[in-house]
Image: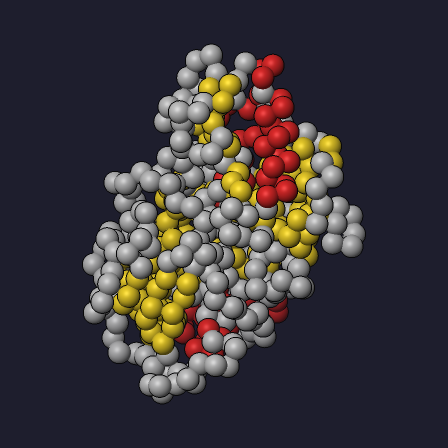
Length: 433
């Protein structure tokens, strides 16, 4: 036992000797505009990352979250980047890999809470593996060998163009330590005019590819290749990197799909309504924090809306056609003030994943698929993905409220456990990896 304790101490000393000690803390929100933010998913192919790590530290990184699904319509986290370190508000997206900031010199930049990022000429070369991971098809030509250009398109039709650089990120560890690793990010000098319906400095890419922040931190041996989030139904919450913030024995785990490695996907699911099968099966599901709402393909969407509407007439709810907050809204005898006023009128949903073994249920109670609009009506936060041009069933933020959701890229598992998500977590495990 003494030898094990010494090993842990030496490991921690080694890690902190390699990292600098100061971090600039910044918090706050920038919510002057209360607009709805809909799904944004990267169309850029990604490449799964491996994890043969050395020099790991038994600690995690926690990033507090500002925002909510409605009425603000988006979430952001604050990251401190550069030298000297400056704060930026980033939109956390598990559906894409590349982290980028609006960057000088701006050819076309959108309104943002902070001045554009200024890089320090620490360019990522065209032949760098990180650059190659953004262009896996092999058709990328190195017109400028010392520079890695990128153009990333999102499913809502917007895009960012720029080049990769490396800079210092200031990060706090849950064991009280500080890290200042050099990480690659995009210097986005040309964004679509409508990129943000909310103020943000850029995107925090948390996908599975080599260029994602979690993959880079893991490849440097700083944290485990595990990313997760816990979003509170009352707003706020947190994202985290590392695996010591939860009791794995309490988590419901299911395997990541081997056939859809570019996404955080548990594969195919069966739709359950009110505890009973709907007959809707083989729904290819993806978890995506870049989407505020949940999107189902037409057949599943029509089944859900039909089942929900069938229940409501005898519960004194009628469709509120004048409320355009979302496609389906209903009014009651009086204005609703909170989700608690309406949950008794609606039945729970669930997605059942078999994955070759015992079925694992991802519960979606009414409070995880409904919102209360500004008009005091209750609205369905599930949208028709087929009409939006999507072939996947996207589990968005609304359906992940009140859960810690974990993407373990090392074990290729996705897990979830009920949690109010209203307090920042503390490490639950101690020991050498």
